[in-house]
Length: 212
Image (cartoon, rainbow, N blue to C red; front, side):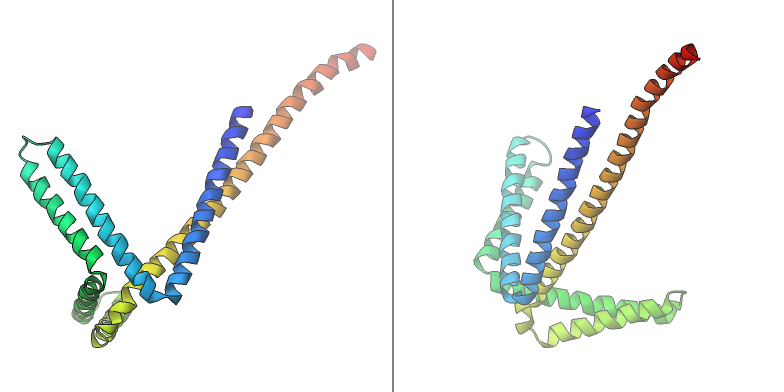
């Protein structure tokens, strides 16, 4: 029984760690929603470092696989990642402006396609698709009309919302996992008590018959 109990405690601590990580992400997301400018710069710097580290790792893999047909392709991709990472780290404001413009154009084109598609097809989800298209079009126009000032808060807002929802998801997984582990541990403990109790009851019956 020590093995299952030990595993149950490990799972309980693991799910508690997930819940704690979720709480930290929720706090970071809320702080980012308050300070969207700082969140935007932070997300850009993290993005640049991810590109840089990914490019260096890809370059090492390409060097290890030299002599193959994919060597030069790996080198080119790694060099592009390294160059893009350096540009993003050195110019986070300009990168934020470019990505914000790109996001606004995505919202605009996505909204237009959803609007046109919902009107032409008129499927069972007509109203929902129409609402999504109108929302995407409106969001794209708002971001585009306020550009480049919108680059100070749009990406930071998205980054903070992603942290917030990821944190809420981890909290839900951690709490739910702890409850499941507790329920399973209680059921196993009840079965173990019943199993240890039943031999005693069986062993006491012959004594009772002898006395009778």
